[in-house]
Length: 444
Image (cartoon, rainbow, N blue to C red; front, top):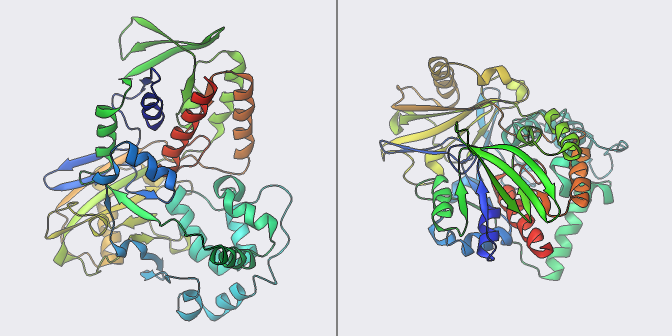
């Protein structure tokens, strides 16, 4: 949708073909009796001036709302209790979050970071090599679960965190490299672009509705693609609408494809492209369920003064974590209530994403009671199931992305965008669409 907006705003005749019966992909906001529930992404992290520029051009920036200062506070479950993460690197040495041996191991990183293996490295072993097992299990593990619903033994540093991997490749010690970069930034006087956690008064779905109404493009939903063929002057797409039998044809000079890896592997391209794209069926996209639940504020002992909490695998909880929705943005629940969202499933426990509503309710109530002191009965709950949630940028994923690059080089007017190549975060997906659309426009 960001790509369609960008192309349309540039004056290009643009048609958006959507497989689902609604636009927005995983952006699903439910409004119900005073509750604003996100079924997919819950926040939009704006940490790039290009993303801000896009939102301004779309007249969305002034509509957006920013989370409060408490959003910077994160909790990690340790020994059955949520413990606040230190707010700065120095805080790990002055707080009790790490044990004395854990702190000593962190301090040794500039001198003891092990030898990097040839090729790719998984994020779990990478963190342990630099900072030790305690940091790996207590920090890297829950954050990989929180970002990717993934397995630290599989997620590739080079594919999922390329900026971090680039720094580490140039400087064996990550700590020394980061201090050097910080010093250079201060000396240059360059201002760091601020991080903003944002949403909209009616939830992230408000952004989708605005783009559909205001964008200079034609949008068709419920589309079933029959074939995608290359022609002398571009591309021919044959499709039908929903359950209909009539086949329509669309011809275009440029084609941008922005679908998840699993769908990418199913697209009916011609044989050459299909051979490349079929490999994306191997990309793991584990199921995740978002279970949102509300309580009376007085019935929850925890102050909920943060973004949320994450659960390391070693804690053996049945959830990946809980987001404190009503602490982030206003009007997410009635004034005397709190809204929380628990996440279940993921790469290491996919079976936990598949339960009936009553089972989910029982599990999440128990976790909220034990971790947050929620003693009362919930006033509201809603479950959203994603059978193929977040693509896993596991070891070997970069080879698949390289195959897309090669296919594009051989296919004039064709490009791919979205979480199949450019990142899984909402902001990354938006910028992927914007930038790839701009590249196509330059070539047309």
